[in-house]
Length: 250
Image (cartoon, rainbow, N blue to C red; front, side):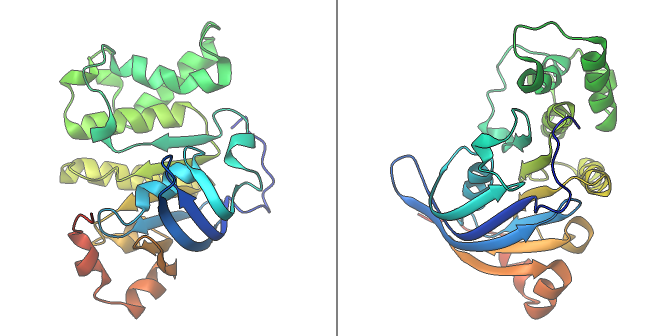
């Protein structure tokens, strides 16, 4: 990791956070939490509850209307390029873009080296290591449009790994993937945390929340609950059922 961060600074700290969309509408209010390095936080709630809104704000893509949202003690925009890896929902990606898996993963290096500088041997090695981490080396030259949904998801997580970020923000990476891919993603996310990386991951499926997450943040356009996974699920045993099939909010 090339991004130097103090180990005693929270990875993400939100206080009285209110996030607005570009058109001025308020998307999320009253959010308070602290995420430390090496933790995985599950961001849960029904569709339209603000999960993606929070991840985009943490990535610096949406405006903080009031309160504070700091990533390693700084505003997201003030961090070194490439410090934050944001992996959007795969339906938000143009899959007709003419690129191979290796092309996509290589893009993870652009924030660190710039688009015009040539790849070094180290850059190529990091790309190969990222492909290997998601078991995609054998598909490196395949066009992304020919991949399954699970393979597409793994390719974009590999791009994030190649970026060498300080934090990972994953927007519903396990949605629509098969059981085998979900298992691979689970082990990958836990391995990132075991390596000291903080991970924020949105989901609407809580059946295996205790395996995935150290903490849970429950949203419904405002903060409902936040705390250690066991505490949240024990206090609200119906939560996993009620959030497993979120309904669209207008």
